[in-house]
Length: 279
Image (cartoon, rainbow, N blue to C red; front, side, top):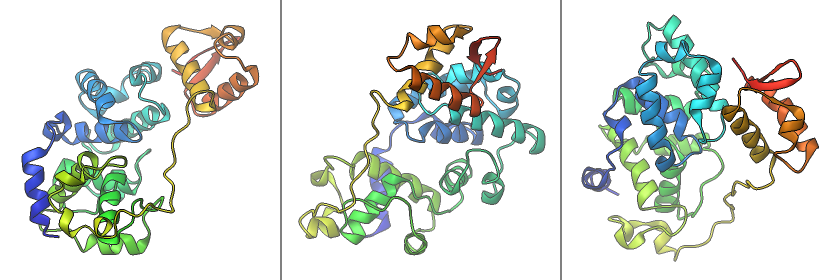
């Protein structure tokens, strides 16, 4: 595959996402929000956050409860706390500027290999190996003829994908991510619109189904939904008693478990015999 084909496709089809025209802090906020949350849900929340907390210092000065409330229904609210903790470190130790070095980024709460690579590429334009699920799925199909990639990239996968990076590695990362999100999608890929379909190994093999089953995130009745129900109720009320929280859910043991994990994660705290979002 000529990388220029995908880069040209990107020039003509990339979405007008506000963090692409933002500063490094805006990119960093978007990367935290986009972990396990689709773009359409992130867009309005990202705009709210950037208006309210335009730099790490402003977020670090906020109350923790306000940060948790502002996260809204993006899910996995621990991400909000990790971003808050990272903002405090950036504000106090990095002169309010998002670090550029991947190893420094990886030392921040909530930043792993992927997030560090994405911030370096999208915030600073540096060539680095970015392997999100969209990119990995596209490469897996095009080069390997496999429908679904493994749960996480191996060292071998990292090595061979590193060799694909052209001179403009940051644009390549953005282009392949966009291509996987819009064309080579997880379900119902738009193969008829794919500009590199004729060279695709998966297509040549007649689209074999993968032995790796993609995991679907259960929601209704799960511990995760129970936690979300508790957090949302505490966003809407200054404090609630245990009996009031029990009325929100049909399993008191699950509420008990949710409260224990929320307390342990620092999202909720007690005040007397009641519960509230952590300050």
